[in-house]
Image 1 (tube, rainbow over the protein chains, first blue to last red):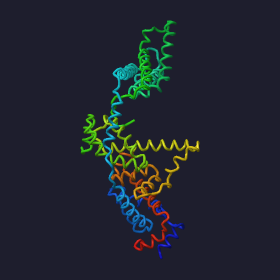
Image 2: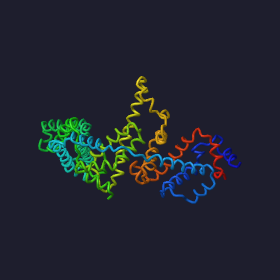
Image 3: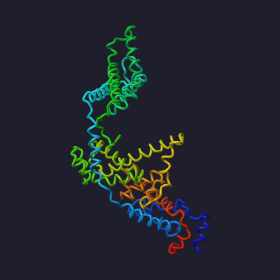
Image 4: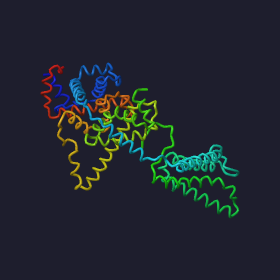
Length: 234
Length: 192
């Protein structure tokens, strides 16, 4: 029998479902599989049709797929009991347990977003134009700008998703703490004035709001500020 | 907009009768997906967890997308979370052997296939997760490759090759133990 010889030539072991698959076989079977499902892709090309006409293994595979498909389609239809009442009750109980976010909590988030916006507005000249004030070199201006933008992004990220507030807290705390401490020392030494350092108040406000948010998150599932993104669930 | 998507949009208002219709229209697919991706015993709990997440996420549901693929991708995510939890739990149990007895029964290969459906389900649990999702979504729920791709976040072509590979593996598993020669002799038309 010729097929026995073919087995012996190409597959010394008794063949199984995968049937000594090579790359041609894999492509042919993907096309066959799509055809069974009525899908256009991957398409049945001429080369694949030739392979199928020639390959014993794929012919057996095709037979097996038809049997498998019939079997799955026959077994998968099964009526289930209607569990709507239980499911609805569970959903309603879940929703009544989720209070809408407190207005104060919402305010903190919007405040944080506002701090981010203010921070960004102030820093744009330094970042883009490289102009952080008289006598500051361009390179230093840009670094200053990048650092402040990073702070603003941190505020914004926490405003959008309050669970991030806790993580951002140490970084922002260190930055604002240093800024404020050094501003006080410098103005005491007469190297600057407190008025000149007032923009740092934005950073301080941001840090304070962040701290409030980080504390609040543990107590209450956060509501979300709507984001222009694909519907996701957490 | 299809009927189900219309229902989903209406259900956002929180009217219980509309929510009930939405659940009634979708529960069997949600349940099946849970049963096939995880297992039948957990399917009820997973379906409930899925509906909690669906209704929490409903306010952010965009009416341009189809409600069916949207809710099935949430269902799949719930199942994936559960499978990951189990992997973690099993890993812990390998460290603490005395607790492992409880899970011995659900390891692949051991449960008796009491009916056809159970046998297919059992075989599916042995497939890699991505192949199983692709196979269940297209073959059991009857979704197109494109919709299954939306749910699994991959291109339709990837679904196609996963389905093909899943078929190869299932055929192999189903015919394991069946003498191959008998198969070939019973099929003289398959000779060249």
